[in-house]
Length: 330
Image (tube, rainbow, N blue to C red; front, side, top):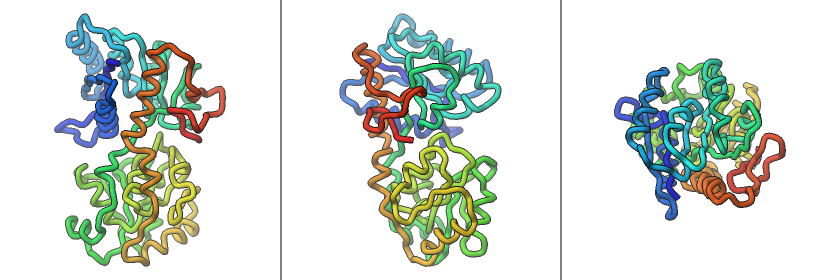
């Protein structure tokens, strides 16, 4: 099967942190034997950037046809139409649906898609219109995010080996991520670390250096940071948005619930008193690996191309089947 991925969410020399999860999915898809996956990435911008992307795609793939053209981000579905395809897919990522200016443009593009991918069932419920929807999140790189010796991580980062650290794994300037909650949780008991200006290759070190990771965002489309912490066996405290509740369910030493200062500080306290607090999170994180979730995308592609009976992919009009390829229970 020949597929083309079109995206404006992809790392570049000037923006190395942009869309690393899309890169990881593309790399994982390319490792699947029966897939031939090409990529066309362009930098995000205004209307002119999408027009340039369409021209570039038309020139690059003139006279060619793909079994699947899969766009990442709703607005990117429009330039992707410049390439001939038997079937078309778009994976939505958040602002393409929730941003006031992007939503109507994305909505118009969805009518031209054969399948709409979303990161969670909750997000699927917010997709406008009637569409066949599959839960197709991007996963994490479980080779990069893995347990490391905490003291060694702190030494490399110049942190106090005996310090008590709480990691807020986002840029604190992003208000929706709620650094104010993280600061209140840390209080005088722990030093709050943030990732606003941290190089991407250092992020696993910061996760492993922390006593715990806090994910208090008002909303997440998925919640990669939470899963990355699980992959490192680092304790996580999170609000129930995106995949947080599902990913943390039943894992001792984690906490997922509405913000309540007393409850969260009570959950955090044991991790601050231990030299190297760890949880058994990696096995759960592996189910959200880039490879595991790329396999779901491959299932969806094969179904679209084969024209056979539809697998029980998630539809907004019915409850998701948790044992289905491409479905995650809400």
